[in-house]
Length: 187
Image 1: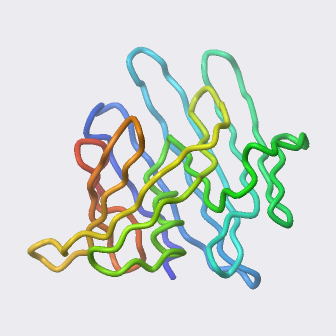
Image 2: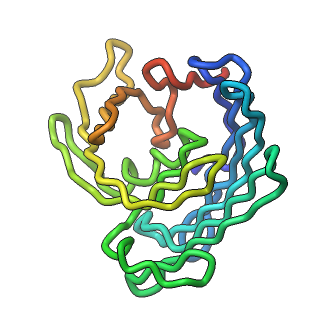
């Protein structure tokens, strides 16, 4: 398990960078990360912590955003399959297993590790989607497909929603290396 940070640069906007790390814990895994961006005139910084169980199912998320609106925080938790956002029950999120924080490629690792897809296999999932810097929480239907490996042997995936489709490759930990015109890992 990689507990050293990795970094990505935004391909779509050179003024954005993301950093993240996977940290093993006794009862599961922890993701620590953040992004700083000057995205279309909006300048913001995002910091987050995601905790999962040993099977990579999300249990809690804490997000902080610093933007022109000031500092805002968001806490999302899942207990016994029931989701809350800032302590308020959100039944619409029930049935979700993963969280997808828009500001980072790091959370793509959650379904990759949890699903264990074989080449050519796909799975439809429901994820808790958190937009950044707005901190809007929605339910998102997503499809992950494991593609044929790249010429260099790296595992490749496709991420598909009703609005977008991205192909990306990952390292042996399931961390994104490149993401079709979005992110590229900094060596």
